[in-house]
Image 1 (cartoon, one colour):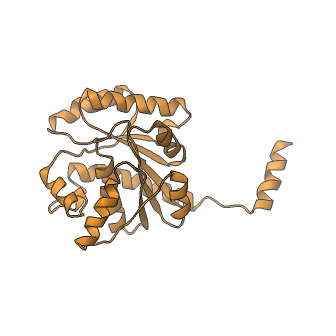
Image 2: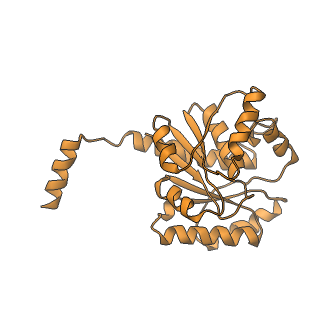
Image 3: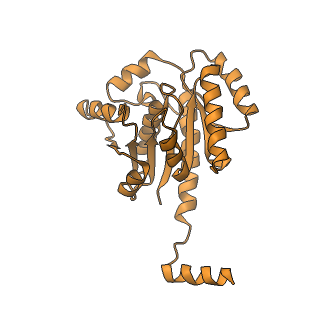
Length: 234
């Protein structure tokens, strides 16, 4: 069974693609059959990054593909353990479609009010549309100073949303890594004990647990499912 993790936001430049690439690299290195779906038609950030990764022959090779919508991505990648979706910013309709089918909806946000307020509003909107709170996670990214994290966490905790531990701080070496087709977590010296690695590790642990749970859900034949439905209706 495929676990779907979507990175979404109401605005661009908050770290969706950074986290999507990082999770893809970590999951692949941990042995999960992983695909990264690029749904950001206006930017195609991860698609261009994949081209750089191939040019620089970075190991491990990753499966990255562009799609027009989330349904086609899920249909084409139905045999993978993990499907990561890099969604577009400023596209509420597509964001809703993505959130409706994802097991985890992760929204990166910076520490300033200009990022935190739209992030909270998007999650409030998704919850009002029926997306369970248990599937919504905020992730702190693009922090300029470790001191920003405490205030940002306090804001999001008051908003009562799930908040992943760890954070991604701005680093020039991360941008340089992306230029060479590397994920930020693949920079020399980075590991799962660093703040960015803690964030990815916490998300990966939830993914592995969800994958185990889905794998043990029995799939009933259509005839049996129909019989059970008729009995339940009596």
